Image (tube, rainbow, N blue to C red):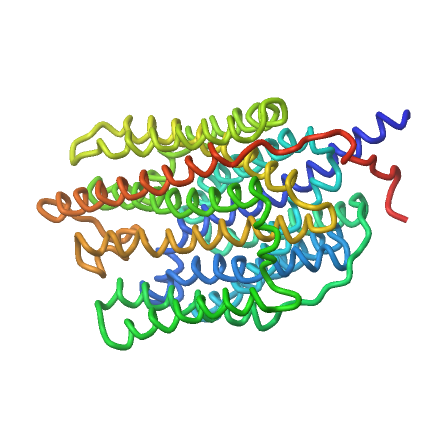
Length: 487
């Protein structure tokens, strides 16, 4: 086999492994949402507690994002990526055998730690393997992995919940994770020298405590209404996050290297990802709540209407990635954000008696937009990061994206609770409550206001994307990988 053929084969295997990790995460994300109502009943838990089955996972990934990326820079990105597969798989096993709600939440924390290792090092593994002028294409294929995983999560997760048991939502990760860990250990090779750094435990603690208190306050206010205690949780949480920022600017080895944000393209790309996540995640849940509440669909049937968007996204993502390599991230990512805005405007026309085809159209337009934005924006971040900081840059991108996602999730529930009763908002989200009459009209009015807020947030992301500048993409940066199995 020629060296060029061996290089191509190695890159294909790396891409397949990274796509598997992304796909597992997507399956887990969509399937868990579908399974929450059954989990709540089986574990004899309450609605507010079960929300933390999702929130705890997102929170852990957010807190650990940059630090496990730094671990990759310190001890090897491939090694940390493979460790992530092992931890995620172990967390899946524990989640599947959980006997109580708190136990499931704790196991989801373990699963989130593995997810953080996978997501924060996957971008760096690709950056180590592919030259800068081919990374957009690679990130495009990871977008395929996400779309396929989301579809499988809906179909397989719905089948498990309906015909078997919700625990299989987690057990399905076991054979995939075991095989992926073994193959990854054999195939993935370290491509860059390890660097000396320290883990910022103080920064992690401050950010974790701050975000937890903010999310706890938002969740409690949504579930029980305003009180002095819940307001204090928000105030202390925001103050702790502010303290985190001040500390990071003085720390010798900060959790978030704000020095990286001096690079214009990288900074604009990271914050574009933040505002995109803050806007888009809320839209997904509001539309599902609309379908389950006023329209009376089951969680499974509601999710099926979003499948066309994921299918189109899987088709478009590789072409969007190649286009980003050719024309630059600014053009492709900005087109993607524009399409997402148009998709939300389609959703904003939904009424009590609208055809469900409107939901399908909105999902298709939004799916085309997100699948164009992600590979282009991800490649712009890695093209603008120093080679010895790929792990930190990848973790930085994931941290800001996840802060946007988890904040958007809480925001969606809070916005819904402004239009209808708090408990009803939670029960609709979990698929165990339906509304009609004046309550339906009130919810839809609130949903429209929230969708317009999401359009405004996406407009900010679009401006950041347009004015980010053009990243450098050269072949010289992409050294060839070693061939043959790991020694």
